[in-house]
Length: 227
Ligand code: CTP
Ligand code: CA
Image (cartoon, rainbow, N blue to C red):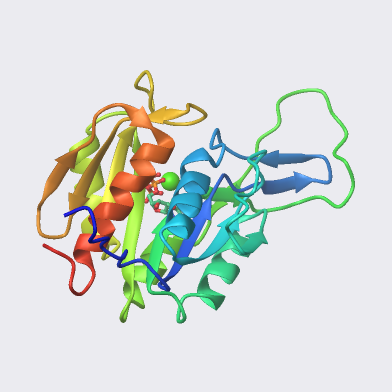
């Protein structure tokens, strides 16, 4: 009945959230990056904080306003910096949600002075960055691990592959080329896949609503959750 308010299972849980893009330096004025704006990750940080969680937000460069209820924010630029900060806070975390769009490659060589243009083409050699989420999966102990999958085709197949190969408890897949979903929009269309093969299709919703829906599903996976 209305007199009974169920306390959130997220209360006092330590939730590590990564958000935004990374920037991989070329020279002092240039970098490689991607279209992530941080909206989904910041919505999750705000929503989890509202539910009483202790949020650590590790974020790449974005123009999002920092939610006033999020106490701990760590700003990073590169995939390497994000990796180091995430690893430093992994042990103390109960739940990790990896919303960030981490660069898969970075330039092998970076320049300390601005590159001058030359005649002819320019070729960049790139090397792989560390897969942060995969590393977390390999070192998982008590933590609940949640990933995102940004796809443009074969959404379900690729997302399920990532769920398994990264040892996740849940993955949220979205078609980033679909209208109303993906980078920069205020809305998203997501499908949640859980380790136990459960599949939950969310309708087109605002990112803050998507965040609440994801957190509700995470709560169900916690001890005493109703799964
Ligand atoms: N991720 C990560 N570290 C990376 C790359 C990705 O932690 N170096 C995480 C993302 O934060 C996301 C998940 O892995 O939660 C899936 O990212 P995505 O780019 O969709 O998949 P990848 O595994 O990088 O594979 P691909 O880009 O080839 O589809
Ligand atoms: Ca990737």
